[in-house]
Length: 440
Ligand SMILES: Cc1cc2nc3c(=O)[nH]c(=O)nc-3n(C[C@H](O)[C@H](O)[C@H](O)COP(=O)(O)OP(=O)(O)OC[C@H]3O[C@@H](n4cnc5c(N)ncnc54)[C@H](O)[C@@H]3O)c2cc1C
Image (cartoon, rainbow, N blue to C red; front, side, top):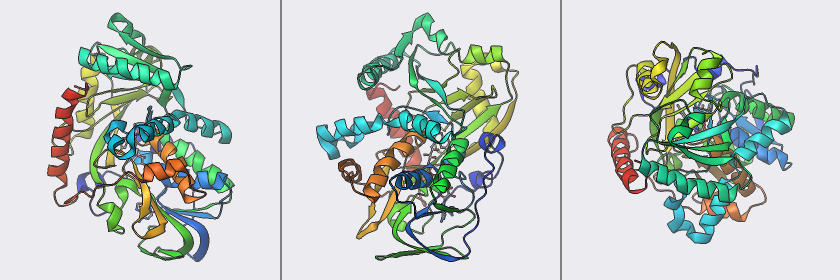
C-alpha cells in the first residue's frame, strides 16, 4: 500500500460512519497454516466477497478469501452508500471496443444493478438499511436536457419503475434545496449501509462453507497450474486466483497495478437530525448526486444523519480539513443546516481506469489468475454486477464475461511518480468534456 497518500493513509483507521454503526460482530481468524482450495481470493471488499459468494452459489464452495486488515477496510467500508443505476461513468467510452451489439449487452448487464443487491439482502436476511429512492440532480438547463435523455433510457429498460423528471417548483417534492433546476427521480436506486451489506454477504459466504481469513496480507504469489499465495504465517495453494484489491493493490502484481490510478474522495456525517429536518432535506429519504464530471453526492441515513461526499474538482489534492471542506459544500446545497454539527469526516482512495470502466480479465499468459478493479469511484452497485459476470468467467464461462473481459485495459505510465499531475490533467479534461456531453 506504499503508493497511498500519507495524509489519507494516516486517517484510514479513524472511525467512519460505517464502522461506528456496524451491526455485525464478525471476526475471522488469521491464516496460520498451509491449506489447499479450489479458488483463492485476495481482498475482502465487495469484489472479493461477492465473487466468492457467486461462486459458492454455483456450488464452488472450496474458496478461501484473504484480507490484509478487516473485511471492508477498503472502499467498501468507507463509501457514500449510493446505489446508483449503471455500471460505468459512460458506456459509450467502450463502444469502439464492443460495437453496437456489445453495447446493448452492456446496457442489459448494467441494468442488473440494484436488483442484485435487493435480492441478496432478501435471500440472506441481511440487515443493511437498504432504502429505495434516488435523485439525479441538474444545476442548469443543459443538465436538465441530459436528464431528459436518461429518463427515456432508464424508463425503456425499467418500464415498471417510478422514474420521473421534475423541474421548477416540483423539484422540492424530491429534494429540499433551491440550487437545482431539475431532478430525475429513480425509485429503483437508493442507498445502503455498505459495510453491513458486505458483512451480511460475508456471513452468507461462510454459511456456504467458504473460508475467510482477516489480518492476513498476501506477500507473494507463485503462478502455475496450481497457484501458491503466501502470507507471513501460512499459504494457500489453489487452482484459481482472484486479485480483488482495487485501490489498495500494492506492487505485488505490477501487470494490473499499472492499469489504474488512485484519486481520493471525502465524506462527512452530521449529527442525527430531527424528522422534520430530514423530511425537508429529502422527502423521499433518498440518495442523490449531481451529474457534473466530478460529483457531490449525499444521502440520509437510518439514524437521520446526512452523509455528504465530494472530491476535488480540478487539482487532485487532499484538503487539510476534511470536515470543513465537505461542510462548506453541504451548506451551499442546504444553507439551513448552518447550525448542524459534523460528527465524522473520513476519506479514501478510489482506483480509476483510463476509460472509467471496471476491469475484469486474466493476467497475460496466466489463464487461471483473474482480476477485478478500477471502478473509478462508482463501485457499490457495479461491483455486484461485475462480480456476477466475473464468477461466470471463473466457472463455466459466459458470452458476457468474454465481452467484458475483451475491453482493453490501458497502462497508466507514471501512476505513482506523477500521480497528482496525471489525475489533475484527467480531471481538467473530464471537466472540459463535460461541456460537450451535457454534464456542465
Ligand atoms: C470515500 C469514498 C466514497 C465512495 N462512494 C461511493 C458511492 O457512494 N457509490 C459507489 O458506487 N461507489 C463509491 N465508492 C467506490 C466504492 O466504494 C469502491 O469502488 C468499491 O467499494 C470497491 O470494492 P473492492 O472490493 O473492489 O475494493 P475494496 O473495498 O477497496 O477492497 C479491497 C481490499 O483488498 C485488501 N487488500 C489489499 N492488498 C491486500 C493484500 N496484499 N492481501 C490481502 N488483502 C489485501 C484491502 O485491505 C481491502 O480490504 C467510494 C469510494 C470512496 C473511497
